[in-house]
Length: 224
Image 1 (cartoon, helix red, strand yellow):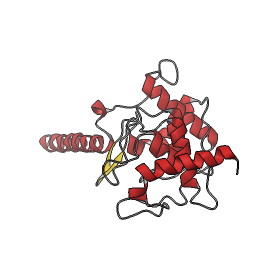
Image 2 (cartoon, rainbow, N blue to C red):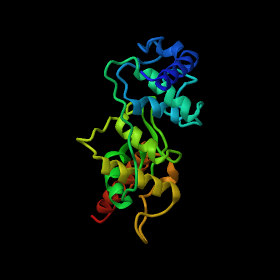
Image 3 (tube, rainbow, N blue to C red):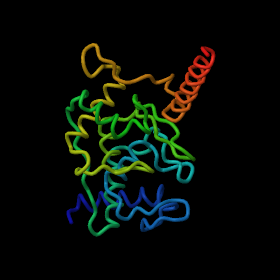
């Protein structure tokens, strides 16, 4: 092991012991208030740090995107130290570049919109679970989330979404963030109903749908 790698691990260990061990355990085995970290891929660990979800102020409240507490070198050090818990760690991080927003929109609608909404604003998806807004996510963080599957989000491997698919989805999210449509004279999403989220939007659609149905039935009855 090189001196540089050893120094990085020691730095990560100090940061981990100060900010993470009280919940996740000294050796990453977890506790009653935090999951174990052994076997977690690098993308998952880095995403939680990079989006400010960890260290968490409240146990298991990890859906809110905040400013990160650590610098990029510190995050790298913590990730390297946590990966040292595992004999065969997954060190891979997504390499997101380019992307086709038009193709990405179709993939996003198929795989992501049910929870995050057509325009990525997020919402409650039941109980205490939240699909967070993607409006502050970088393209790299989008790629990390797809590969890591944080929280209740499923993990999409390369057998489900290829690296090109990830590039395209991240590009579409970026297009939504910047307000630049995927193609000229083309809208980037559907009706967002003031961005209240997919669950609330579903209730609104159900309410108006039932109202239209009742009016239709009443209209049929009045013609007799």
